[in-house]
Image (cartoon, rainbow, N blue to C red; front, side, top):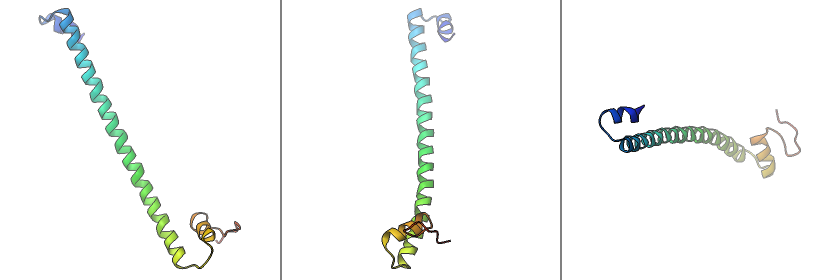
Length: 91
């Protein structure tokens, strides 16, 4: 359709087709950049959410480390699973 319009305005067939291809490539490139931008934004949001979760976990772990003289594996279990080293629940 676009090449027909360009031909109607006096462009030769080969020039009209070439311009149509260029316009199509530019449009595809623009759409690809938009998708990449959206993907990067999604990645940033996922990383940000992960950092918040990691920060909370680190705070919880540091608190447990500061308040306990237990074996490191026990501290790890308490921080991440809420249980003792042997798997018993602390709750």
